[in-house]
Amino acid sequence: MKNVISVGYDIPGDVVQGFQFKSNDSILDADIVVFAPDIRRYSGYESYAGKTLLNESDSALLREHTKHWRSELTISLQHGKTVFVIFAGAEDCYYHTGRQELSGTGRSRAITNMVNSYDPYAVVPLSHIPQRSRGERIKTTQNLGALSAYWQEFGSYSYYEAYLDKMTVSSLVTQTGDKAVAGMVRFKEWKGTLVVLPPVNFLLMTRERGDRLWKNRKGAVSAATVRKAETSVGKQFVNALIQIDKAVRVQTERTPAPTWVLGDEFALREEVALEKELASIDQKIGELQNARTPANAKLEQAGNLKGLLYETGAPLESALLEALRLLGFKAENYRDAESEFDVLFVDPDGEKLLGEAEGKNDKAINIDKLDQLNRNVQEEFAKRDDAKYSKGVLFGNAFRLTPLNERGDLFTEKCLAGAARLGFALVRTPDLFPVAKHLKENSDADFANACRKEILSTTGKVVAFPSLPENQATALRGIFVGGSDRSKSQTGLRLGH
Image (cartoon, rainbow, N blue to C red; front, side, top):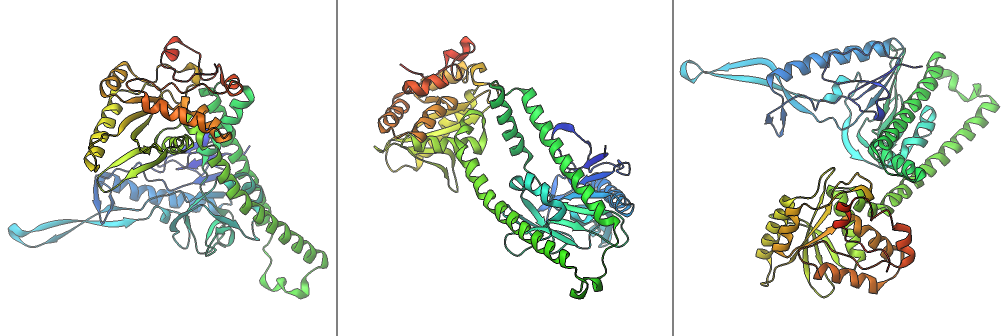
């Protein structure tokens, strides 16, 4: 079994030994190295020229660790090892050089600490430092070769944060400009190969793998299920690297063909035919991959509503906006120079509502979020041309990673009491999911109108949405309601008549 060591790049599932960049650990025992220059653990409390300036202690450590890792990488490559480098968003900074300059004399004498700029990518033994640029549209070249199987597995989850103008073998390039984001770099003094790969969205892969495990088991998404998904994704990634390593070693063990032997007069008929066949296959792979990328994006968007069940932050807001629009509200985030509101939504009759969304991992939504909503309502009132307050609605997704029928109360008693005093409505976002799902899949204006009325008319308690049609309710009964009495006490969804 190949010994794989990762430095600065988190591979899910703890399937390989991992080191921090901020260390003097050695990678010389590894058969395969995964390396990303992650310097986030170095401390800086000041800024210089708009970038972080590391403190003097960590500046000294950074200089030491940079020398260490560049030496380790160079030795590994010289001795025939495959090093995978991931250009994963390493931010540049400034550091103290340890030198000082004196100016002036007497009382006006001043000491200036000298600083230098630092690019983490400079630690990688390349002839040029990568250029930072983020994007998601990547296309293949005719030199995909050893990366073909890897790209088929991870292409739809890959993005780039830096590129090189060229590599020895450029396998993946930017959609425009053909800048190399993946490929191989070799130097004549190396027996090994440096393979550049774009970062992978492991979080999305793990989430999708966990969803499939959950669906297949027809059970709850437990911590064990998440760990199993992480391990599955991590092993898949490491196995793909091992296959690339094997392919690369086959290539490097053979003597590279000299330039003169590539002339047409030495070409063999079978060789020419196979080259054309491979070029055609690579073209088809590229076309299929380019077609898969937008299809995958559509798939992700198609499942956006599921964020009501388990998301927080901006993804929860995105799912919430979609749901409210399905209900017939005009809904949007609100941002201006002074204010920022999660959700501003308007009923077809012109009634304005202001919402705040909150997801909690393992606790109920408390009074703090309600206080923030109240401040937002007051702030928005000051901006209005009329003398009418918008209605406040607090959207809560508490215990968001716990199976729905095992969740406790989603709002604390203080939050309920505060909502009653202010006349605000409370909405459990998991209750909103089956409602929005029904409206997305069925044209039902009457049901949408009834749901809007419930939100508009509910004050000081959890919104109880109208009953779903019986065929929809049967499929969901026992998933959204059930569990403990505490869960039932705040259930706002009615399933069936």
